[in-house]
Image (cartoon, rainbow, N blue to C red):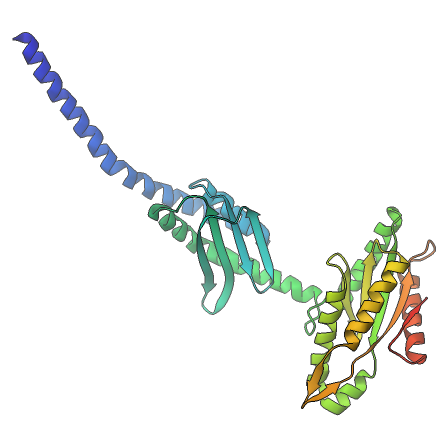
Length: 309
C-alpha cells in the first residue's frame, strides 16, 4: 500500500515537473528573443558609428549578426560609388535586401547559406538592418565625397590633384624596388574643332568616351588621370618600354575606332601620345617633361601617333 502511494506521488511529482518545463519552453524563447534583439540593437547602433569607411561598416554589421545566426557568405553592391564587398561563398539559399532611405539608393545586401533562413532569423535581421541604414548612408556619402575629391567630375577618372599626389610616390616605389615605370601623356587631336563644330556638350561626350576607351586599354593596376582640358596621363607600373609601347599603340587604335556620330555624321577622333620610360636620373618633373615634350612632337609631326622620349 505504501509502495502504491509512493508511486502515485512520484507520478504526480513528475507531472508537476513536466508542467514546469513545458511552461518554461513556452515562455523562455519569447523573452530570450526580445532580450537578444534589444541587446543586439544597442550594441550594433554603437559600433556602426565608429567609422565612415564603407567596407568597415558592412563588415562590422555582418560580423555582428553572425554572432546571432550563422551564414556562409554575403555580397554587398552599391552602384554609386561603385562599391562591391564580397565574403566567402555566394551559393545556396539566400535572402536579399534593397537598401534605401528616402530617394537615396544605398545598395543591395545578399546573405547566403546552405539551409533556409527561418522566420525568427529574418525578423531579427530586418530589425538590425533598420539600424544599419543611417550609418550606411553616411558611409556611402563619405565615399562619394572622397571619389569627387580625387576624380574628375566629367570623365570619372582620377584628377590633376591626385596625379600630383601619386606621381612622386609611384616613382619612388619603382626606383626602390628596381622596377620599370612608364608615363604616357595623351592629347586629343583637333579637340577645339569638335567643340566649335558640334558644341561643348558633344565635346564633353567625346572626352568621356575617350577616357572610357583608354581605361579599357590599360590594366586595373595602371593609373589614368585627366590632366586638364583634353589631356590625359597614364602611369604604367612595372612595365618596360616595349610593353608600354604595345599599350600605347592599343590606345591609339582604340580611340581611332571610336564610332561617335552626330546626326549620322561620324566624328573622327584621334590622339597624340608622348611616352617616357623612367631612368635613374628621373624625378617627377623630368619624367613628365620628357613625356609631355614627346607628345607635342607627335602633334607637330602630324598627330595620331606615338613618340618615345
